[in-house]
Structure formats: structure tokens, C-alpha cells
Amino acid sequence: MAKRFVDTETFDKEWFQLLPIELKVFWFYILGKCDHAGVWKVNRRQADFQINSRLNWDAVIDGFGGRIEDLGNGKWWVVDFIDFQYPSLSVDCKAHRPVFISVEKHSLNQRVSKGYPKGIHTLKDKVQDKDKDKVIDSGGCGGSETLLVRFEKFWRAYPKKIGKGEARKRWVKIKPSEDLTTAMLDAVSAQSESDQWRKDGGQFIPNPATWLNQSRWEDDPGDAKPDLLKYTGLSEAANRALEED
Image: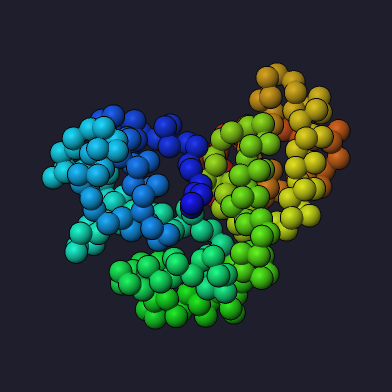
């Protein structure tokens, strides 16, 4: 039985909140019933029965605003499924081979490789030549934690939940090892107990992207400093630009 990641912020997203209840249920249904690449063999009667609702099938795909595509031949595809489920996708990992088989079968090569002209072969070359792009740990999937899993650990531990997308970009750029991730989590735990972070309701806790960008895990817990960027009078866009430098 396959086990899959679930986005715990799905219910907070506006596009999901605006869906009628039957499409909300169908979203999780298709995520569970699709294959390793996010391809679902359309079975309307079974879906209606299992989610206990008769869907307006002519409007289902349009209701998801491009998140599901009709591949033809009775197959639908969850567009971002592979990127979300396999942040360390590797052709050298046996557990990932069904993904590549389905990608090849349904002619999704260029979609998966993000537009590279050689499709799946280019993805394989990138994995072998630059493991920093898709394979974060040596040995393919190998049982080691992936970059996304480590980031989620960091995000759960960090006391200020703001700018998750920017923080994830910083994390991917840094590519922390398992040891460095442990050090970061220890630093977050220690700094969370500092007077600087605890005073005034935590308003001086840096944004997570700033904390990562400035290597603040190297600070002494007692030296935790406020996020001064928000007091400079710069626009939000300007602050983001500074964080990305």
C-alpha cells in the first residue's frame, strides 16, 4: 500500500476553500487513487460511489483551475503531484522507477523535467552529474531524509510561521545535511528560550527566511537579534530582495 505526503496547509489555501464540498473530497480521493506519477485512470462510477456523491463530471477539471489535466484516453493527471511527492526524485532509486515508467508511458517527459528538451534523459543526466538539483543525498533514495523532509522539520520547529515559500527557497539554496539540520534545530530551540525572542510576544523573532539567509544558527542563544529589516522602512518587496542577495 502506497503512502504519500499530504500538504497540511491545503485547508488554508483560498482555491481549496472556494471548492464545493464534493470537490474537496474528490481532491484527496484522486491524490490517493492516482499512480506514482499522479496519473488517474478515470472511473466515474467508482469515484461517485466511494466519495458518496454524484459529481458534475463536466465541470470537475475546470473547478481545479489547472491543477488537474485531461491527458486523453481516459486518464487525468495531477500536475504538481511529482514535484510535491518526490523532492529527491532519482532514476537510481528503485522505489522511484514506477514514476519514470508512468512518465514515459503517458508522454510527460518534458513536463517532469521542467521543459528540458531531452525530457527524461536530460533529467537522468542532471541527477547523475549534479546531485544538488534533485538528489539531495548520495545513494538515491537510500533511506536518508530528503531536503523537503528536513525543511518541514525546521518549519515545524521555528516559532514564527511567515513566508514559508521564501524560507523553502533559502533552505534549498543552503541544502543542509542531516548533521547541519540537527544543529539548526538545536539553535532554534535554544534561541526560542532567549530573552530577545521571548519578549513582546515574539515580535523580534526574525522571519525564517532571514534567519536562514544570515546563518543565524551560528549565533549564541543569548545574542539572538531582532529582524531589523522590518524597521528600515523598506517595502516588503525590497526586504525580500535583500534576503535573496
